[in-house]
Length: 203
Image 1 (tube, rainbow, N blue to C red):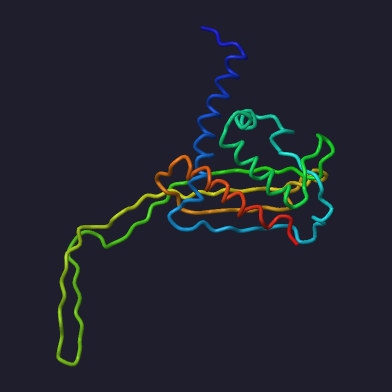
Image 2 (cartoon, rainbow, N blue to C red):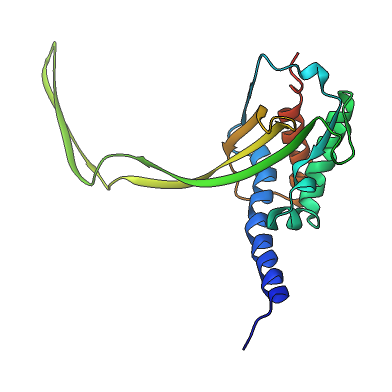
């Protein structure tokens, strides 16, 4: 059976939907991680950020499977709306294509990590010498325990349009919780975006 180019394109977008769905959910889970997420900012200290007035979303000017997905995803729209509000509060506004000062882009990833604790299986003992002689302790370990958990990373980039360079980056990292309600995900997504962008532009 032949598959035309339009059908292949649709399938490609569907695959992107599945891949990106997990990543965007990760952004919400990151805010509710078991340990409080850490936030870090890095930027070009010599760059004149005070000259920035307008911005564009990178996806709006660069067509890709990911950008096609983000146009229709409610979680992505929540991220963008929150970021737009944060930037507006700092006197920045969206500009027309070809006339903005910088692009805003973000990435969300997650990875599995294993933590091994305890001793290897078998007999374990020791001898200690003290004032009243020696003491011997013997114990048995059932073996090492392995815990698997997921770490999430959310990254916001500010890209100078004239040079194409990343001039500012905010990163949030933390261990993800297993489950959250929809309301919790929505509120905590707002929290992560706020914490990432509250230090932009640098003073």
